[in-house]
Length: 94
Image (tube, rainbow, N blue to C red):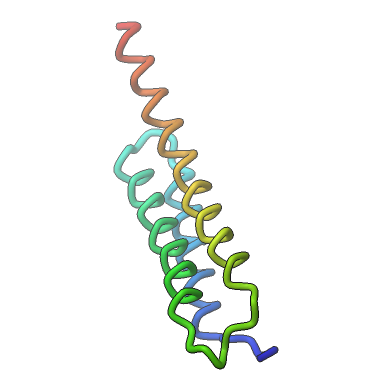
């Protein structure tokens, strides 16, 4: 309790950086999808790791960690939905 889990932190931060980099591409739908998948994996990893903690490691902050994982997934969904809606509106115009 009170220590930093470095392996967990490195994995989550690496996935967040990869997701942000891929989600920033404006013209490629596949890159946005890869960015969303990276955010989804990162958020899922946060949620699952907080739910699977052994009883002696639980500190009462599991609900906050689950909420953070959901926020990460939703944050990754925003660029993907924006790109889909943008492509849809350009197709209707032509």
